[in-house]
Length: 145
Image (cartoon, rainbow, N blue to C red; front, side, top):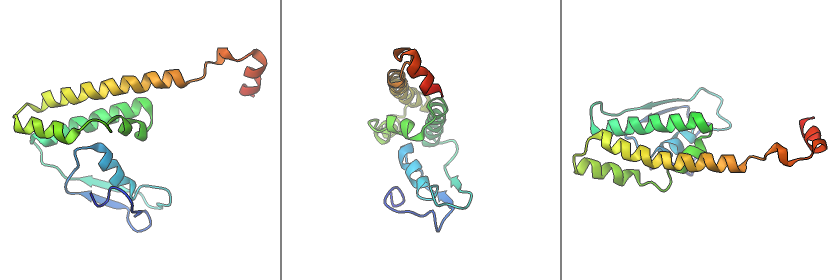
């Protein structure tokens, strides 16, 4: 994937057209990140071409919807995409296509995997937050000021 890493295009480009979409949203975010980054002084526009009515297109749309849903809950693209690092989306989709499984079944399997990771991430966030009750009154006042 030529535009996935190692090049900075924000000074020379602000429009991206993806003719072939990667299965993994990490790769797509990396592509977009080549032009949508610090130093970009224009509005970035991205167009993604895909065939409507195909199994691959349906699965990709469901995956993108799920990523957006999780992103709205946790607020960080990096956290959402990090959840997908150990899921081999390419293999999952290719198996679905080869076995002629309905897109909904593949999407459900992928959603289950992502929900497990989302739950783990949210639990980690809960454990990572500092409980204000662990501070004495004077420390709480200093922090609030």
